[in-house]
Every structure is written in structure tokens, then in C-alpha cells.
Length: 180
Image 1 (cartoon, rainbow, N blue to C red):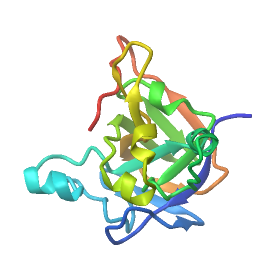
Image 2: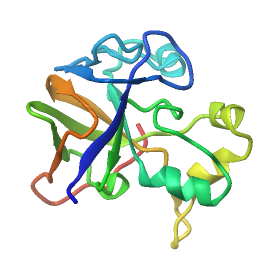
Image 3: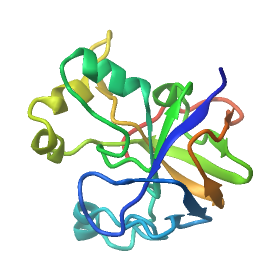
Image 4: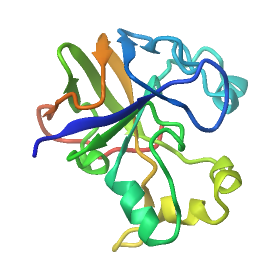
């Protein structure tokens, strides 16, 4: 089975979770049409208070569906869109991709991975104790973020559940993902 989209979500207002949709439209340089986080400049409320003129490197949030299975094994029921992601994937090791990886999604959309999602304390408001499952330590003791990746839209297009995802790695040397 190849890499694919399993759910798409968007919300025009600030809220932690995003309702699932039949489809979303990605707009080049902006993000998900009609989503509160779409725009050329940063739309994350905390980051806007710091510097509203910084570029929006968090236009589209992607999470791998396999994370929900891992969380369920630890007693946390989480469904697509509930952690605020726009695109839920299956079959793509999102967290292991290098910065600058392109994802070709569906018929025409292309996003570029900019970094890891830095989870916020709202996660524990959603499910008490969940933050510890999404931010931990790897085998070497380094901080490990599991709450998905952020991206910018290079080429727009409509995306639906079931759409194929093609991973295009950047030319080397590869730079590991950092939080954005």
C-alpha cells in the first residue's frame, strides 16, 4: 500500500481541533483555503504576538495516522483533525523526513516540509497527560517531537481522503527537522 491521505480538516476560526472535510483546497503561498492559519505571514496567535511580520512556515499541518494508533495503545483516543492538523497521512514517515522535502499530494498539490510542530500546552487541555506522549526523549536523550510536521504550499490543488502522496527528498546533504 502506498502513501496516502486519510483525512483532511480545516477551520475558519481559532480552536484546538479542526473538523474533517470532504476536501480542502491548498492555495500556493497561503495554505488551506478558509483555514484560520492560512496566510503569507504567521497566523499562530502566540507567534503573532512575538512578530506578526515573520513568514508563515506553518501553513499546512500534517500528522501521520499511525500516531493515533500509538496513542490509543497508551489509552488516548485521538481522531483525525483533533490535534489541529489539516492533513492526516498513512504510509509516510513524516517525522523522519529532512527539511525541504516535497510532498506531491493528489493531482496537483505540492507542499514543502518546513519543520516539526512544536506542541503547546493546549494538548493537555484536550487530553490530560497527552503532552508527555507527544514530546519525549529519543534513544540518545534528545527531545523528540511527535505532533506532526508543518509545511508551506508551493503548488495549490484540491485534496481528498484517498489521494496518493509522493515523497520527493531534497538534494543532500539533508537537514534534520527542527521545530517551527
